Image 1 (cartoon, rainbow, N blue to C red):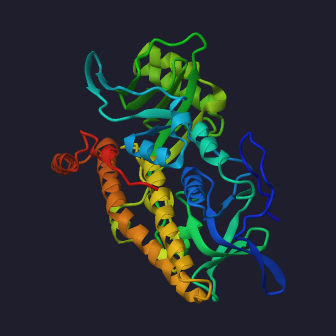
Image 2 (cartoon, rainbow, N blue to C red):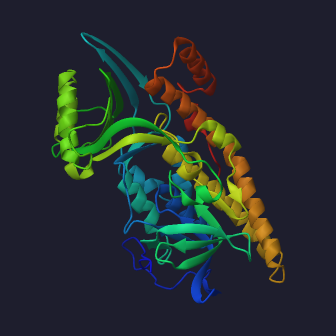
Image 3 (cartoon, rainbow, N blue to C red):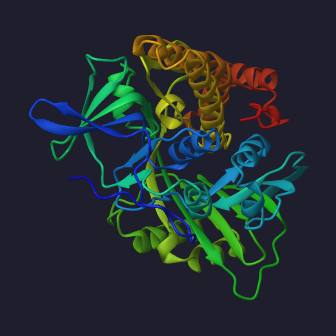
Length: 434
């Protein structure tokens, strides 16, 4: 059986089962049935559950890990993401964990020549410890609504409703009247909807945190350094904590990529070979080994698939990376998933209110149609927004990673100008109130 459900946070948790859960017979075995099941306990999944909870709607989050996961070290959150965190009621406490980043500091080092440019950040931007965000989202979700150790082996249509039947890896089954896939790039729910697998860009990236017990002297800036074939970022979090990422030309070939200390040693040697600045070398050398995270590829869904993809089947849909995985090139993947959570919860809450207004005598099929219509409204609202984000990220990635021809480069730059990329137009977006 899946691992028992767990609540989060310091306050005393109630152990009663959500009111939306009952038991049904599936074949010879008894299976759970839930009104809303969210697959994936990452940022988007937890934000969706919390947004629904704020609207008075219960849900169940199924997470395959045995505890809350916070892979990826730091995460940048722009103003649009902070607007969502305010709606979820967690912005104030998270702001206390990270300083405002006030400057983009771009440095391009080519041999003996170094060019520098500083551009002020005109909207709210902070780099958070991903663990802090995950815990802030999870702690206000009621007990019993996050269940760990749940691996889904298959999803089938529920013949008795517009929802789905989930088969777990251990053979148990669960019915979901509404199913929301928030489990990231390799989403089983996205596969059920018929979406193509995400694409990948080979790129080795080492990320981590460095703690300065006596404080550091860095400005509250996002340093973006290009030296040789390396692209390096440094983001100040607090007076004592710094987040960094190193985009390497290629992954190490003579060490296991699971041995993160050795990966770091290889990166340090190669950075020294290209005469990377000493302060960057020191940050990486002194980093917390437990914080290190290494990936060898970026995941993305091409913008044309975001524009034309099918994100709904009955009362089943997706959100976050399962819908619109994008590379880290504009720093909007996490915030876009937060926006999804608010828009989806708002749409579902309206549908639930309409269904309740129809009375208890209304047929179940009518309620399901209302829910299906609400999901369709969510998709219609989100598709233009995430399509533009995916396009901007795709083009930025092409410029940074793929080395396009001069003509293609000119076309990419022209599109980015139209999208307002340099002015960070994407950060001014407001998805509205919950």
